[in-house]
Image (cartoon, rainbow, N blue to C red; front, side, top):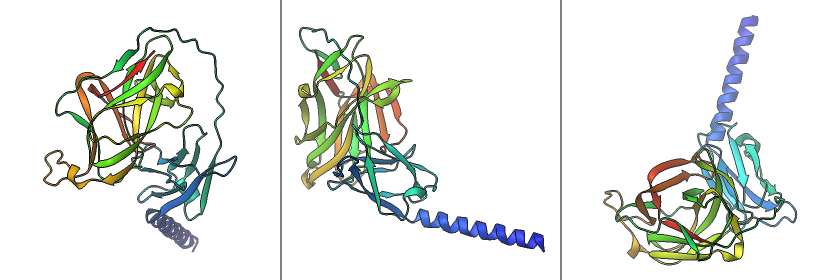
Length: 291
């Protein structure tokens, strides 16, 4: 009799576990992200599943939707934004709730840095283009935390980044919005975010070199860094600018940067908390001027 009851309990627990798992597999987590001090909605905050290629960002009202289909209930979700302390949750913490996630501003202690003038501005990065070698994104659904970046060797002494230059091969949109990231290098991979505030870059040109003035941000760094762009938003799909890629028969929408072969490296990740990939002997045509 006792064995029979134990079997029934085991079966009941199995059924309950199955129902919970099935329920989670079929749900989308929703919520909003706000500033903890004043309740102001945070635009383009990152919401990602740690070590998974699934993520999203909050919209212009701070709202977000994250598909968690086929993800375990104990998987970790990280909510972050440059200039704020991140928060982490499990999927189970956020399922079936009206989530309001409030992030606290990060207090950064500024240390005095002496920047020695270099004279003329120095160029660091890839300034030349290898024909037919491209990197970028396809489709019309950005905002997942997709990033592309490269390593920049700034040298031993602190330098001030004056401007950023990108070679856009072509885009299928009237404009595209990117977020700039600058991270340190840990074991030759992107590490901690070094920026203290958001820098958004809107690109309206169809192709060619894009020059971005960064002098007002007082960006002073030294050593090796990883500079990357995150695909945030596209505006105005232009059907006359669609492209065929990778032998496809159909024309698709793309945002593509030129690459330089046999130089540097390229970093990519396909989600705001996804694992980074590194590819040697090619780099996106990104360079900075420093002084």
